[in-house]
Length: 198
Image 1 (cartoon, rainbow, N blue to C red):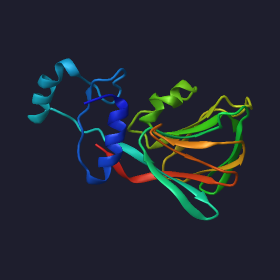
Image 2 (image 1 turned 90 degrees about the vertical axis):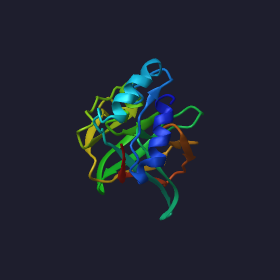
Image 3 (image 1 turned 120 degrees about the vertical axis):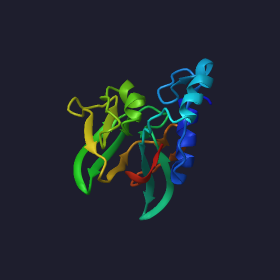
Image 4 (image 1 turned 135 degrees about the horizontal axis):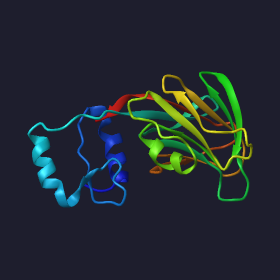
């Protein structure tokens, strides 16, 4: 019972245990907690009698690598976001997919979002909606410096690597619920987790 943020946090915690979740919306949006609080008893009764369909949502496993060592790891259901610091200026990221150079992104940040997260921050930053049945991610720059840096849809079968090339006080957020700071030369790697949320 709560909002979408509650569902994201619980979904990450329980994914490794294959525990199905039912989201009852007591928050504002209710994209993934879609049962209204004032009608939960009728909906829950029907679900407990078997009137439901499972909706598997993939998770992302992200790591921050520094000098060849993992200094931070986290799961994300919505998105992994590299942000510039609070001071003026952009962050520059070298983007690779499966070890192949894709682009240097100079922007306020960069979002790697799952289909679930495509309806959240990535959408606000100009990214497309991705149906949950599509095995893909969307990479969306935040206030990009270059006109050619547009959102890109990627398969979720590879490893996306973001190397911090320039920028001060940059950080990485995981579902906007966990955060760590990154330094020049750090690499943020994102790959599909073996776990999913039910």
